[in-house]
Image: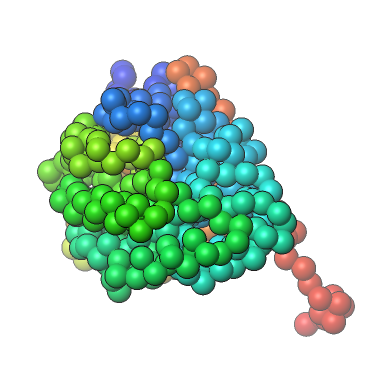
Amino acid sequence: MDYFTHRGGVLHCEDVPLSKIADAVGTPVYVYSSATMIRHADVLRRSLEPLPDPLIAYAVKANPNAAVLRTLGAQGLGADVVSGGEYRRAIAAGIAPHKIVFSGVGKTADEMALALEGGLFQFNLESVEEAEMLSEVATRIGREAPIGFRVNPDVVAGTHAKISTGGAENKFGVPYADTHAAYRRAAELPGLRVQGVAVHIGSQLTSLAPLEAAFVKVGSLIGELRAAGHAISVADLGGGLGIPYNAELPSPPSPEDYGAMVRRIASEWDVRLVFEPGRLIVGNAGVLLTRVIRVKPGSTHPFVVVDAAMNDLMRPALYDAWHSIEAVAPHGGRVTANVVGPVCETGDTFAMGREMDSVAPGDLVIFRTAGAYAAAMSSTYNSRPLTPEVLVNGAEWAVVRKRIDIDRLIAADAVPEWLASAQA
Ligand SMILES: *Cc1c(COP(=O)(O)O)cnc(C)c1O
């Protein structure tokens, strides 16, 4: 469910015609719907009732824009951060430290110190070595670090290999067989307060079965850890629930089904539950708005060349991701086309042999479901400006990230002295 709908033949985001944004800001541009994000946060929250006071820590990496974080923070969401930069973004957006979870496999001593000084709900640690480093940092600055270990439950997530994280071969978490030793070691280390267990098995999961298998393992672990004398009061169940990208495929499980499963598995655990949804909250709250540059004949299908490229939206090149492609003001005809960007890489292909609205040069087109892992991964490859972002709220809209133009990119480079006077 989202708020991108046709009105009078023109696709709108809430009450704003996308053509108006394209004319004012230029293309390509990301456009986000506040109402859609708020709705998703609300649906998830309601699906978890009546669990007592779950912490919904939005996974900042999905979309770290300051205006997005403020929108979600105002809904009471916390933040799951995976770097010092994300921690600082969450704090800058007004998210309370006691709602921040710090995840990630390679936290540095500086990042640990930053979060300890500013405060946080919990570090999710991924190894004994990391616990040892955190103990040193916490002792040095005189703070106690609340921790849980991220357990690798060795389940097959059934999603794209590049976003599977819960298999024994993946870099993430403490191997299930080693968890007792890890907790034993952490309990001996000064400066750490052992309080939680965490799990996150992957992203864009389209079945509840692997999540349930992982949560069942977490449940047994909680019992075993308590029996071994650890005071476990938190279970962080991660994120990962998939969203529909392609209307022709079966829909992933709904947040309601997910919530019912969690309640069934976890209601007797006697812990505070934490959730780290990213894609579920922002995925279909965004579109990438682009303009057709030209239509070029091809040997099988015509190539529709748009002014967005893999640097703006990397998911198709990175994960073979499927995004729905639609005209903002369809003329009525249909065509089968290859949709590509201008970047000099064959991977800069959004879709091959796609049946879509027929389009002509100058027409506006959207890639749907581009609110998560989209602008967040954009780059300036091929010396293309960094894509701007717009947030819509009813009839209001605002640029929430300016286009970072070529002048600024050139200015960020520096020419060393020995080249400054070099002439051809
Ligand atoms: C990426 C990530 C998430 C969010 O995943 P989604 O699929 O976007 O819900 C949550 N927790 C951790 C540790 C992550 O790395």
